[in-house]
Length: 76
Image 1: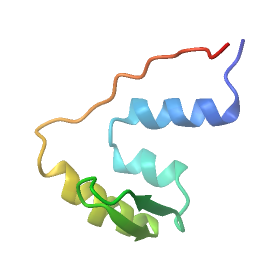
Image 2 (image 1 turned 90 degrees about the vertical axis):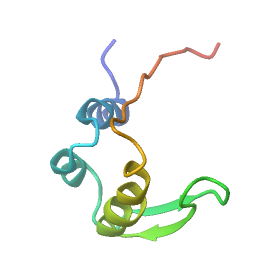
Image 3 (image 1 turned 30 degrees about the horizontal axis):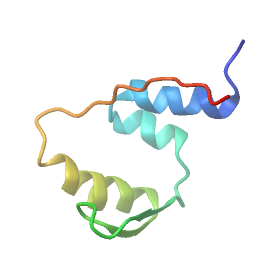
Image 4 (image 1 turned 135 degrees about the horizontal axis):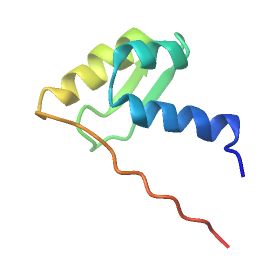
């Protein structure tokens, strides 16, 4: 079965592993991130530039590498 457009988009983001060119291509310039208080750099970020620089830029400085290991589960 083929992935839905949304699943394909999320897969592309995971596979990009933080590549800013891919992120800028697939995310809206007027994106809004609302990160839970208590999470590092929790708060509200408005616009792609702020999300990339202020949130991810601050968060990634604490890691040498960053990646994800997505696993697929089907809920019955």
